[in-house]
Amino acid sequence: MSSATPTSGPPPVRRLSLAGVLRLRRPSEIWFKPALSSVAAVAPPNLLLLALGRLDLAMYTMAGSLCALYAHNRPYAARARTLAWVVLGMIGGLAVALVTASLTREAVVLVAVGALLAAVQKALCDATRVGPPGNVVLTFISSAALFVPQTLGQVPGHLALAVAAGLWAWLVGMAPALVRPHGPERRATAQALNAAAAYAAAHGTAPARAADHAPARAAGYAAVQAAWQTLLALPSTGARATTRHALERLVVRAEVALAAPADTDPERLRAWARALRGDGRIPRTGDAPGDRDELLGVDAERAARPAPLWQRLGPLTPIAARTALGCALAGYASLALGIGRPYWALVTAAALYQANLTLTWSRAVQRVVGNLAGVLLFAAIVPLAHLGQVLLVLCCLAFNFGAEALITRNYWLGSVCVTPMALLVTEFAGYQAPGELMTERAVDTLVGALVGFLAAVVVTNRRAGNRVEQAVTAADRAREHAARLLAEPVPDPGAMEAARRGLAAALTDLRATADGAAGEWWGRALPQERVVLAERSGHRTLAEAVRRQAPRPDRDAGTRTEDVRP
Image (tube, rainbow, N blue to C red; front, top):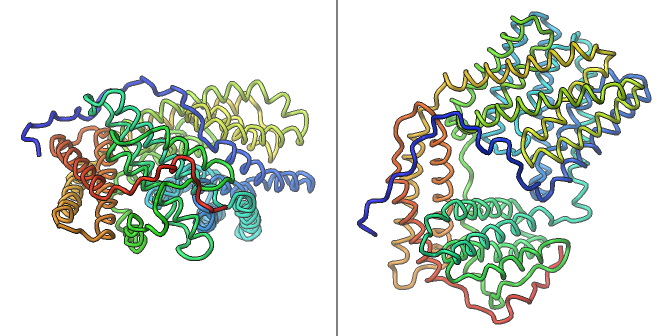
């Protein structure tokens, strides 16, 4: 280990920066899938209600239909389970909201219940890592339902509509499996290969300044970890096991590239990634037939059970407290201003809360810009929508597609479509004065963003520093374990691979934890030097493990393919 003291990382960000907040990114590789799924899930129930003259019930069917937005990055076996839980969570939140609305019309009570629901939804979505759109859609539905007059006798029928639409959304989400059953895992593997290739290429252009490539390396390890999580969610036996093992070998090569970029050909990794598009054969990596040493560690990872849910919820207590307080205060501020839809302010606050204050500030700016631009778009489109209910429904579907298609470019761009869609949905039950509707939405957006962000500033996350210490300790232990195995004359291949992946996972978690803590304000100083040392020594150990266990090369590895069809 080098005796030189590493330079401490930058101090936590404490200024309200606008740099890059509104910058557009490249669209998601599968941006069209959630967009099309959303339309396919929402359109049939809405058009059926339109034909029956009961468009006022569309809010309940949309509760189930919007579940189709989730789990597009998961293998289909895991997606089936995730979508089922999302539907149950949506129905549960809706049931609480409808029962509460049927028992009281006190706005103060309704806002309090909405804030508590938002906090629970935020904590559960973050703990289970359900992925985008996270808690926002759940909170939007449950908060809006709180302010719709109900009777207890109506609740079962309304919930039945949501359940029926949720079942349809589940079918829509699973339908692509009929066409490309291995699509999610192939995409995850390709993303890992491309991320590793990007790091190897950057390292090759300026190897003497490897520290400058730390973001690319962190992104590469994050993509590799995501790929492993995707592959480990697949069945371990049966016909799909052959495909899984072939993809595992490619992810191993991405790991090798990250640990030893100087010995990597980035173009070969990119060629493998391109070959994974479509339904062609999976490319070979050059393994000798039957050579499974590098996959022995996978079995150990697959056997490891995730931490219990209550343990994952513990670190999220500050975020949940921020959500509850911010949503409640935003709703009450809206009530104090005399606005009839305080749930708009509540949902705005709920949408702000990210992993740390810096990201929360960025989301607040994006939300305000997107919503205000969306109000202006609504003003332009509302005359067309008022020509008839058919056009009203079609406009909502168009904005639904636009929101999901654009939101991966930047959150504010998606919000430009979400806002007019939400405003048009309020007209399903009857005509609304556009001027009043636009004014209330603009005011609620500003109130929700301001009050919600102030609540985030007040509720500090003082556990962030402790989690960094724990992550450093975990990374050090993983490195020491791998180093002990490397010191053995002939380490067990399975144990060595499990240790290597454990170290890679620990370093990925350390970087994510350190980045999250650096974005918190008012916290104690972070152990920057310990983080730098842990990362530096950990990646050196990874590189040594790669050199020790480097697979045997195959001269035709760049062009040969596994005889595996999806």
